[in-house]
Image (cartoon, rainbow, N blue to C red; front, side, top):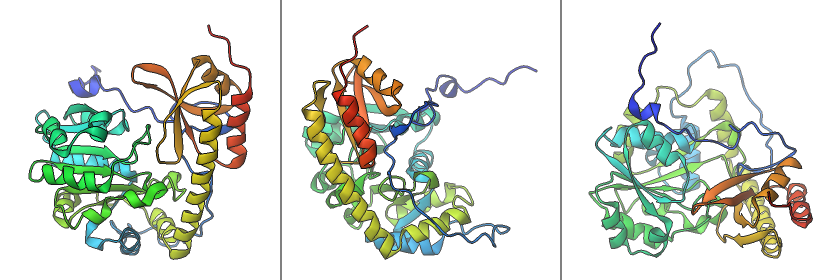
Length: 353
């Protein structure tokens, strides 16, 4: 049987390489920005013979309360990644429209655009950080969606709410400004959620994967004005949220659970401060990027030191940034996990090959 020809954009697609897709072997996992805290949950399996509520009311209300929004401004998705995909699929015409992003940043924006044959206006993080709203709007051009990862993965760089408001104002009637807040719990004061009542072209993406310690649940939320969500509600799958996921998410959003999450975030932020100091004083590290999120990105003097860590079972995330392949992102794990990083830093430097 002859092979069916793929669309050109799929045939040439470079798929996103997630931390877990690489099938690495290790003992200490600090490569996926996961929380070191596991959760115990109680589940009711009696109703699994019935289709679930497409948008579970109790979860929507709980998250709206947590985010300071109305339920009409909240859409529950399969991770924030589905929110990215839904925005591109809903608002962009394949082969015609573009998205804008600021590199380096989260890779799924590009992969999603490529998958849907949507163009990319690739801008620099330096423009986002240092340029005016007018300069940014001019550089964005005719892009339909503008993705701002805040805090940015992998650099940790942040954008103030005032600047996001200015960018949204400059792009009013031209583009949707999509603020990906996957790591916002680590710097809650920077959230753009409070701006949603002021701008009809603003979207905020959230997840339970990071601070809420539920990466395995694959649960996210798209926060936006009701008019922006209305067409997305037509595009989303009929039953995107399983009953089991809804139960766990509802439990994670109780007041007590949110208090516990914030306590864990405080512990992780303090651990990050300590590790930043250690990294800054290490001969193996050439540069430490200062930013927010439950990770630190560093430039290692010798690539072989990264290989040395991998061989010892310490799994962190290597990157090529700014044209150099000696960058490493280290997730903030437990004290025991971070001790493995400290031990690696004190080992003799690997010989260059």
